[in-house]
Image 1: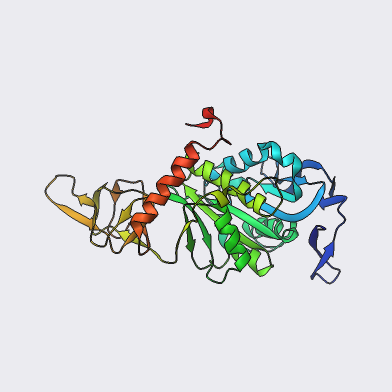
Image 2: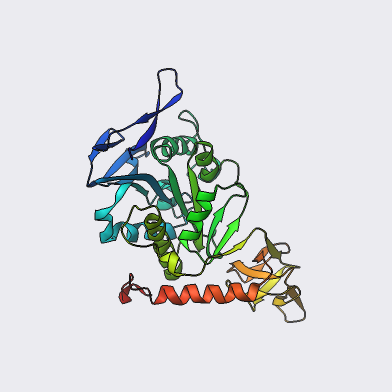
Length: 365
């Protein structure tokens, strides 16, 4: 299968072209089949005259196959995906890759360096797609990433974590109108749970879909942390997807595991009042409607208010902050008919990650 790319025509529109198997071209660099190289795409220059670039690691396999992108740190403080991509690229099997892999571990370079979700202009990059080459810094970065990376691909995996002071159970998100193929790839990824959720306007996933590039969204762990189990789940999931696409040798590990739990509705339980939060449940645990999830107390110990489950399901996200205001999001429940079975599945997945032979013992934290 030949690689493909969208390039601007003289009129400014984008035209699909075909590239030979021999070379893969990006950013003015030609990469031969069987080679790998990091290409620096110029982004900007800082006030002190230091150039800033978007690094893209390209593995161009000797054999034909799909072109796939991996992206992380679209939100600069969501760094779980950075370590996931680092470990994926270290896999010796990448030397036998069929097709082409474009790995971008740090999309929002500015936010990453500043340990911030946002760019210096305070814009959320994941609300600025498809971007504009003459717009704000965020718009220009979105335009660069979409046109130089995403449009060259047939499929992508975008890696995220929860926002600061929150934690997410490893999960894959797809849209309600996702294709049969994307749903198969979600199952191949093998995260504990697959959530069906609407695509946000201005997001990378929405812009990629409009360009004909379907994307899995992986959410796991918390901001500014390398959480080991979410990292392991991401590494194994990506390798499994690449095997399912026949890009890597071997049988997808998802074929040897139970299918992920699926849910189409999630809802946050919110603080009934301000105060000090103490929770009795955490991510991956099953709950029934009316279950006591925690309490919010005043600092003098005079009163406590129960936090109750609003429905039957599995906890897939939570706050890590003990200080809350009325209305703050506390625990995120994915509604389902058999949450106990889902909890058992999560435990099985976590146990298998701890004993997976792909990972070395010294990688455990």
